[in-house]
Image 1 (cartoon, rainbow over the protein chains, first blue to last red):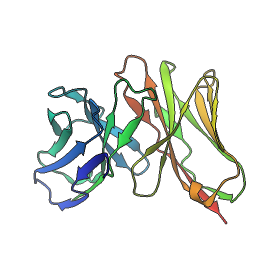
Image 2 (cartoon, rainbow over the protein chains, first blue to last red):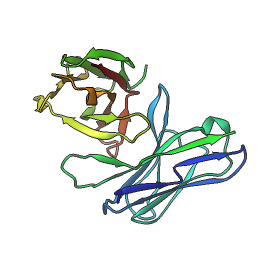
Image 3 (cartoon, rainbow over the protein chains, first blue to last red):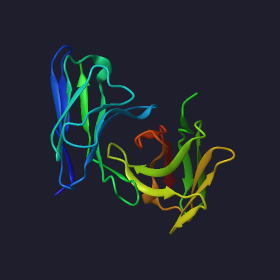
Amino acid sequence: DADVTQTPRNRITKTGKRIMLECSQTKGHDRMYWYRQDPGLGLRLIYYSFDVKDINKGEISDGYSVSRQAQAKFSLSLESAIPNQTALYFCATKDAGGPKNEQFFGPGTRLTVL
Amino acid sequence: RKEVEQDPGPFNVPEGATVAFNCTYSNSASQSFFWYRQDCRKEPKLLMSVYSSGNEDGRFTAQLNRASQYISLLIRDSKLSDSATYLCAVAQLGSNYQLIWGAGTKLIIKP
């Protein structure tokens, strides 16, 4: 089983709809991240969390919200989706004390907003 | 100017050749550097960290040039399976270890 999972893997929705993307991990890591990836722009950080109930804004948090109710789960919400939120979304985890400072990514959610 | 920049490529390279690409960063406070590999439509995976003294992992060599503010990745004896996009990531001291990402360099190895 994958260590970091994301649901759904693909989603098509309409402008104005509320969307939630879920991320779960079995790695026991305390840090979790949400990124979006757009062609030519690289990964951009939306929100991150260092522990349950800890929430921090990233570079592009406007239009998004997150929830970290359990160590293993970090969900991303788009309250009212708009077409420029069409992107590939990745969740990542990191062990704060890990020797490599490596981030482990989920398989991604491809979101299309019409 | 972007904080972390990469040549998007694609680099088209014959199998067996050596290829190198760079990643420049603008913030001199950058402390940690990484190369990730991303296959098409897949998640990024850590290829290697980049240490000040340079480091090697099999056919892959990573170097850091602090004076000129860039890191490099060299791949020797390239394989078809090396075809991917290579992302560099940089973290600054005091940033809660947030990674700033380059947009990636696409590498295509041809038989």
